[in-house]
Image (cartoon, rainbow, N blue to C red; front, side, top):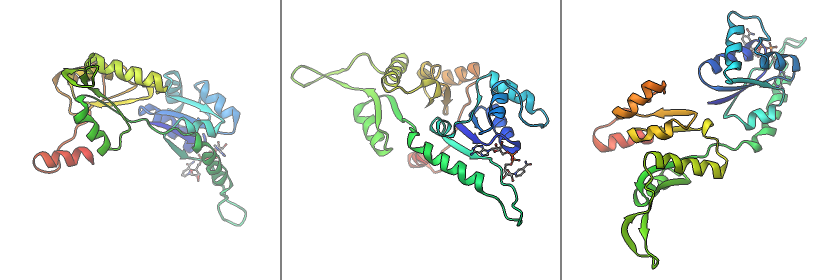
Length: 244
Ligand SMILES: NC(=O)c1ccc[n+]([C@@H]2O[C@H](COP(=O)([O-])OP(=O)(O)OC[C@H]3O[C@@H](n4cnc5c(N)ncnc54)[C@H](O)[C@@H]3O)[C@@H](O)[C@H]2O)c1
């Protein structure tokens, strides 16, 4: 997941570094340029056991960057964690001015937040894939089509190239290029052996209950494997667990 961490003090710097170590893409934000420069140079702005090594590793791997710009960080991430200071006032109350300010800044960045583009890419035909996409409210469907002749009559053939394996990967690549969707920031969930082609192109491959060939590819490339089991009996039980 893409996460922005607001505030790079004791809590924020540790959260940002450890989330990056856990495989997330993290943008740390702080108005103090010195803290931002230190992190981008792979150095720690705080004193905490092992934090220097973790920050150095994660910055070098490109999983952790820092900026002073809240707005751009909000626009580029899916979740923002607020870790700004909440000092005590003279009367013993909490001073919430930093919290208020960062919340205003997050609000300013939200209109630029693009959200997710969800695509159903399937080797099924339109008659199968499109109703499923409608049911799941998925706006983009890349699937196989029935061929028609010049008079608009069905020929009995499927439009070539058939969307499957490498062709499915090519169709998704084409869709992403046209819509400026970054495949290296995308997730792909599938179970088929032929889906290894697209798994290799995305930043976050996620085989789900993979068949033997895809499971072998997942082991080879160290892709995290997701497993789902039916919660009920028979077909309806499976469907419920998939749609949950
Ligand atoms: N440090 C601890 O051990 C600890 C433990 C439990 C809870 N907390 C709580 O966690 C919160 C953060 O504590 P901390 O110790 O990390 O504070 P800190 O003072 O070390 O860091 C706060 C950071 O927030 C930054 N900041 C201020 N305004 C900002 C803005 N608009 N956008 C982005 N960054 C901004 C500051 O420049 C600073 O670097 C506080 O509410 C604190 O009470 C801290």
